[in-house]
Length: 277
Image (cartoon, rainbow, N blue to C red; front, side, top):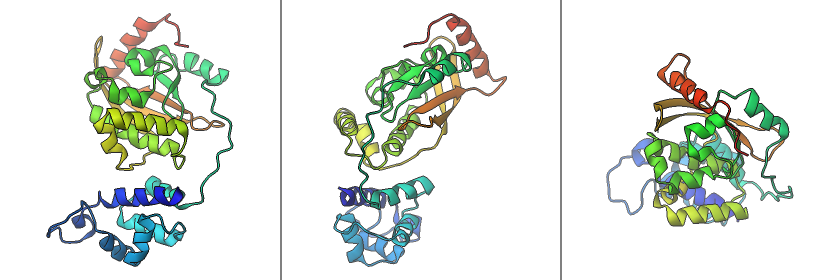
């Protein structure tokens, strides 16, 4: 399966790069989008036959130098290049016990007390919400424990009205899911989740087959909140040490901004509300 994963990734990224992006003339009729195999091989300094074997999964041991050359032509950033190397590596046998669907008591207390005025949620590697505080639940129904964030993003139509930058957020969510699951694409839960969404949402399927990988820990969410109006929130994703992929997602506003004032209103409204369990 390792060779197929590598081949699928190379093919997807090759089809995204335009000839003019790598200094080739854009003219001429092309039967496929992006670069031709022979163009990529030439620019990477390898034979077309060898590249074809890589893309077809018949050669599973490319050198780091070959992978770096391919990454350069495919214009991969550092995380995507690391993902390429991981796909080309030996299969990883996962003997870890299943990740518990809860957070540690210490982390639970932390998000209730220390971050009581800041929207905070804890997700697992499948993007299930494991815990959240009242502020997180107040800015979006997506941050209720038990909700799968990426499923809701593509299947809950109400979220498209809530999130003003839904296109950007959904694209980043798919790339983040790829980063979280890494090379463990045969994980039963991953197969089920991706299969469900690819069947139900053409938009998810289009983004998934791009093979974008983004572990980036920061971004901006813009919401049209029904009670307090527009919110522009910076978010940070922080890895929880000692877990298999749990993340803390923290939202914050620029001090003194209209969003900060509106968050204060929400905080006043939620004072005394209980943390969703």
